[in-house]
Image (cartoon, rainbow, N blue to C red):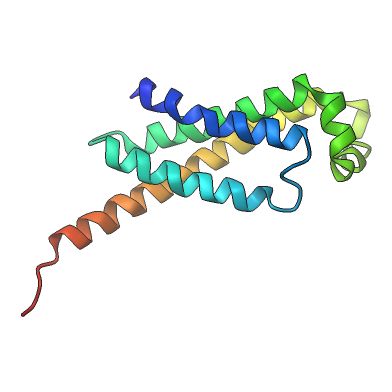
Amino acid sequence: MNWKLIFSLLPFGFVMGVASVFGLTQGIEWLLWLIIAVVCAFVVSRRLQTKHFPTALLVGFSMSLLNGVIQSAFFNTYLSNNTMAAQGFKQIPGGLDPRFFILVSSLVIGIVYGAVIGLFTLLVRKFSKGVANQSPTT
């Protein structure tokens, strides 16, 4: 594992967490996460020669967890700036604390998001090798 690379990509999760707390990602959060996934896939594929998928998995997992920790830590601000999320938290069963729900869901989402980045990384590697191995036909 390249921990330096993993930690160097964590600011994406921090920025997304802060932006979501202030309601800046409403309606476009999925697009921002997709762009971040593509950027991370390119970075991981370019910087590493091996262990692409596990590193990308940890990148996505770490970013999602950091995002969830920030949302939980600033929960009241998050709720006041994200009215749709506030409505969604009313539907949590069994009186589960919404802060805990955010943390648990960020773990699950992080695994899925990390797998997506990992797959993107493998696609970038495969496409890069395919392009590099093509010879011009003149």
